[in-house]
Length: 298
Image (cartoon, rainbow, N blue to C red):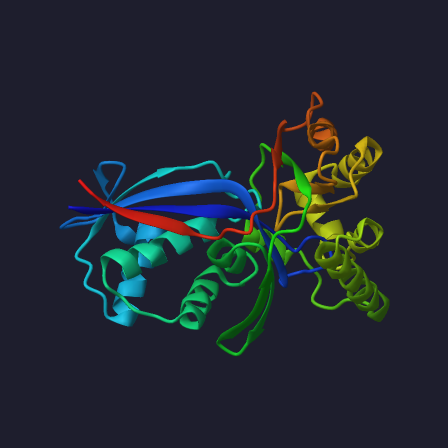
């Protein structure tokens, strides 16, 4: 029996001012093990494939591109926390797509794959770096996803992961439908500095670029003490900090060899008070590698 192992990276998205346009792969990965089966199952139990994101994606991809996939069994090792703004759902979608291509015989070119994933996710800023790796800049053009990717920047990433789930739908509903002209201009300028900092290794530009007026101030109400956490991270040696995706994860960029663990602890500290939800402090690095897979036999 042919088996397939798929590793998919976690992703940071938005990176402050780059709302729905920027994503970055991390060396934190989810692993999925697939095998073809007469029905659909997960972790040894029969499931409705529509209730399991990786299986549903595999079935939909096979149906779209002519693959033959009577069923799949999947087990997974999760290192990417769910519903925390680190692209957990994107890892499942990418893994399911790879399973349809490699085990079901579906065929699709890279542009079709990315558009399919973005349609399922609702936005492309997580799925692009999960699929392709590195730093991704994305934009939707009808049903097409325009994108450019670059190797991962030479930085370290401090993460505070509050023990609090944030619904992407709720985090989008809370945003205003219109923004002041000054705030739009602010974000455009900060995005230009952010990209300059990331692509040229310019720490000062990066410091200026990691600020936002489009989404973070509203999402802080769903997360908790975001600004005190940012201030603590800066005091501990971060170049800047931001909400990853919809949250609740907060991330900070730190120079290579810098006090990354201390920054992570500082980010997490405001959530660890007697009335807080608690938070885990993690350290990661950007990754130039997107999804990887290997087939075997069992």
